[in-house]
Structure formats: C-alpha cells, structure tokens
Image (cartoon, rainbow, N blue to C red; front, top):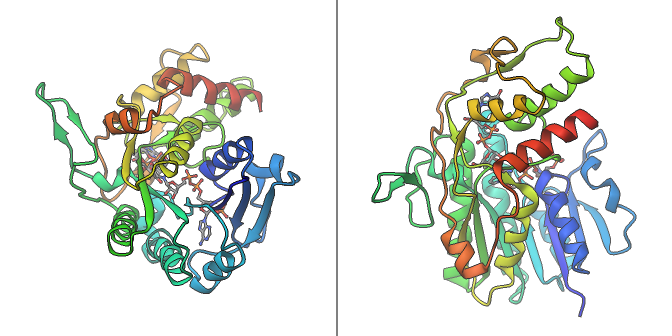
Length: 332
Ligand code: NAP
Ligand code: G4F
C-alpha cells in the first residue's frame, strides 16, 4: 500500500533531499511551506509537478495552522519535522523567533498528533549536534567524540531550542507512547546547502571567483573563526537515516555523522586545492563580524548505533563532499 508522509521544512536543504528519497520509494508526499513574499521553492522545483507531491501552506509557529494540516491528512504514516530557524549565528540576533520556530514549533506538531489521536503515525524530529555545545566524551586514547550518551551543554539560542524540542520528542514517546524518534545529526552539506553556512559560503565564493576569471579586484572571502572542528557529511546520505529511523518497530534517538572531524581551515585547504590553489591566505580575510558570542569548538560524532541498529551506511567521504560542492558552484 502507498505510504503517505508530511514533511515540515520541505523547501530547505534536507526537506528537498528527503522528498526526493520518499518519492523514489513511491510515497505520497505532502510538503509544508510557509508563506513568503518571494518564491522559496527553488530546491523543490523539480518535484512540483509530480502527481504524488502536494505543496500546502503552513507555519509551525501557528498551532492552529499545524492542527489543520494534520486534520486534513490524518491518514498519514509518517511526519518529519525539519522546519527550523537553523542558522546558529542568526539565533543570537533573533533568539525569540528561533525559540518560536525551532523549539515551540516541534511541540505544536507533537501536541496536534496527540490531540487528534493519531496513534499510528511515526514522527521524526531534526535534532542537532549543536546540542552538545562545549561537551564531549573521550575514548581510551583520549580522542574526543559525542554519541547518544554524551550530555548536552548548548552554546546558542538555537541549540537550546533544539534541546527543548529533543526532550519534548522523548517526553511524548515516554508519556503518551508516541512513535517519536530524534536524529542527532552532525553538520551535513551539499549542493543545496544555504549560502550563508560556512561550507557553501566558501564553495560559492570559489565558483564566483573562477567565473570572474580570477579578477584581482574580486572581493575577498570574509570569514570568522577558522579553528572550529566540524564533522561534515553529505546531506543526501543523512536523509536516508531519517527514513530508516521511522521504519524501526520502536522509536529511538540516533547520532548521524561521519566520525571524522576537520577545521574550517582544512575545508579551505581541500576546496582551494580543487582549483589548483595551495596558498589561499591572500584571498581570505578574517572578519570579526562573523565570530559568534559563543562558539562550539569541537564536534566529532560516533555513529556506531546508527550503523549497527539501523544498518545505515555513509556513502560520501569528506573529500567527495568538498569536490561535489566546488564542482557544482563552478558549473552553475
Ligand atoms: P534549512 O535549509 O535552513 O531549512 C529549514 C526549513 O524550515 C526551510 O524549509 C524553511 O522554510 C523552514 N521553516 C523555517 N521557519 C518555518 C516556519 N515558521 N514554519 C514552517 N517552516 C519553516 O535547514 P536544513 O539544513 O535543511 O536542516 C533541516 C533541519 O535539520 C533543521 O531543523 C535544522 O535545524 C536541522 N539540522 C540541520 C543540520 C545541517 O547540518 N544541515 C544538522 C543538524 C540539524 P523557508 O525555505 O521558507 O525558509
Ligand atoms: O556552517 P555553520 O554556520 O554551521 P554550524 O554553526 O555548525 O551549524 C550547522 O550545523 C548544525 C549541526 O551541528 C546544525 F544544527 C545547524 O542548523 C547548522 O546547519 O558554521 C560552522 C563553523 C562555526 O564554527 C562558525 O563559527 O564555521 C564557523 N565560521 C567561520 N566563518 C562561519 C564563518 N560560519 C558561518 N556561517 N559563516 C562564516 O563566515
């Protein structure tokens, strides 16, 4: 029988990849998009005419809007909450908005599921490695890592809102028996990544620099802290894990990551090498504007649980990811 899923955050990087995956599995997909004064469907243009895809308007900060969408589609099998104000730096400037969307929005969905008695629906919450903030565990060789047992010590309004949504998801599972799972996803990127996240900002700049014919007058790439470590994977691999979580008999939380970590400086090295530049120091300027009031210095996940319990596999290496992004931004 055809399965049906609702995806909140359909117009985002992950929403678009998840929609592609679900449609390839013959799902009917209902994508929820908020009203915008300009077109926000750039990442899903290729599926708008698909007869199995329906785009509906809604905003997760509005409980009434969420309830109406769920009432209208109360026969769905799966609901994915990918909607968020997802930019960490922005969350320091707009903490209230971030709280309403990234924190309370999740509650609005969970409460609607409960109020409408949707006992058979399976729910996915997009949790984040940002929730670990300053914290990590260490193995016998003193290597740092984070896994499902590492305590959260959030360092931004975004991460605090994500922690609230994460615990709310666990609470609805324990209190009401909801089939509610959270994926604690480490950074994942790709050709559809928003242009203000650091990886895409770098590869987009390289693409534009190449298109300028390496014009000596081309404005330099302005970045903040280059020493933070991130565990970067490819977004297409990560949406598979989301789907796998909802195919399990029992709901649970899973860390999704590569297990490798690199600094922004290393990302720059690999990205510039793709255009044959070994020394990028005269092309990049460190600008205080892009430093954060509080930083997350080190993220490296342990994906043992996802690999062993879900059978999830990573398909793209760090080098593949950077190559894909640079190539895309040069060619498009
Ligand atoms: P993204 O590209 O920023 O997409 C966020 C989506 O949320 C967009 O579709 C956005 O709509 C939508 N949205 C924002 N406010 C909304 C509202 N009030 N009502 C309804 N929709 C709203 O984020 P992403 O990279 O795809 O990430 C997906 C989810 O995973 C997010 O929750 C993010 O916090 C989380 N996450 C991401 C990563 C990562 O590395 N990418 C890692 C861990 C967790 P518009 O297009 O209209 O703005
Ligand atoms: O690319 P970023 O903005 O990603 P960040 O803050 O790690 O958050 C992303 O990953 C999270 C998962 O861990 C998600 F939950 C979240 O939604 C988002 O997708 O910044 C990465 C690092 C930071 O240390 C930042 O300080 O890059 C540093 N950075 C240096 N210069 C910069 C810049 N970040 C941005 N966005 N822009 C810069 O110019």
